[in-house]
Length: 397
Ligand SMILES: *Cc1c(COP(=O)(O)O)cnc(C)c1O
Image (cartoon, rainbow, N blue to C red):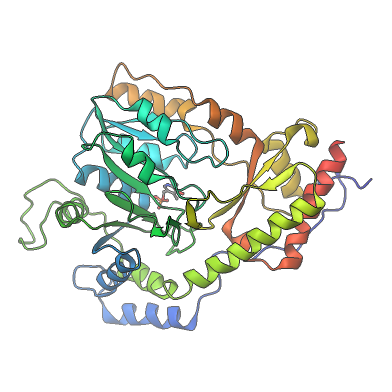
C-alpha cells in the first residue's frame, strides 16, 4: 500500500491547479490603461462603474444596481436600505462565510441562525419559518457554493413585511427554476473578492428591481446623497462605500467570459462526480438541488462516509488531500457556535441566545470542498483528485 504524503509518501500530484485570477487578457490591460489615462479613477465622473453595473443588473433581469467596495458592505447596505435597524433580527444560515452574519451586526441587528438542509447545506425554509418572531426584519438566504437556496419557498413561509436579501456572493450565473440568483428576493448582493468567480481583487454589487429600494441603496453607499441632490446635501445618513473605476473596468471584461468559464466548471464537476462514483468508495459530489437549474460553481462539495475514511473529519481528510496535492478544504466553521458573534450580538440584544442547528452540525464535518479554480482544470487533472480520495480511503481501511 502506498504511504500517504502526509506521512512522508509520494504525493499523488505535484502540478498546481489553474491559477486564480487567470492571466490578464489584452482587453483588461487596455481597459486599465484607459482608466489610468482618463484621470477618472473614482466613480463620480467615471463611466465604467455605471456601465458595468447596468450590464450586470440587466444580465440578472433587474433594472437597478450599485457597485460597492465589497459584499460585506453590500449586505450592510442592503439591510440599511431596507430599513433594518438596531435590535432587529435577521435570519441567516450557520454554513456560510462569516461576513453574512457580521454584516448583520454592522447594521446593528442580530443574526438568528436557521438550520440547513443536510443534503445541500442551504438554509431550510422550514427552519426559517420556525425562527420568525415579531422582531424579524429580514432573511439572508446564502447560495452556498453556487447552489441556489429556495427563495420561493422562504418567501411563502415568512410574513410579507420580512425582507429577503440574497447573499449571492458565490452564485454569479446561478438560477432557481430558471430565474437568476440575486433577482429572487428584494435585493441581491454579489462579491468580486479575489476568490470569487468574477473578481477585481475586491468589490461587490447590490441589485434590485425596486426603484425606491435602489435609491435607498445608492444613498447608503454614497454618503446619504440622492442622485438628484447636491454634492453636500445628505438627507439621510450614508457612507462612502464606492468601487473604483479600475475595478469596474476589470469586471466589465469578465462579463464576456463568465458563462463559458462556469460551463467548463460544470463539465468538470460532472466528470469528477462520475470518477468518484466509478473509482472511489464512500465519497460523492453533492448533486445539484433539482430547483437549481443553473449552478454558480463556486465550490464543488464532496460528502464522505466518515467510517470509510477511518473516522476522518472534514479537517483531517482535507489535510490528507492537500498533502496529496489536491486543494481540498473543510469549509467554514459553523457560525451559530461563533463566540465573537455571540458576544457582539449580546451587546445589541442582552437576551440574545443562539439556536441549535443539528443538521448543519451533522453535515459540515463530513463535507469537504474544492474551490472554483480547481474546476477549471481538465479531465486528466480530475483523475488525480479521484486518485487522492481512493488513496486516502485505502490508507484508512
Ligand atoms: C465572499 C463572501 C462574502 C463577503 O464578500 P466580500 O466581498 O469579501 O466582503 C459574503 N458571503 C459569502 C457567502 C461569501 O462567499
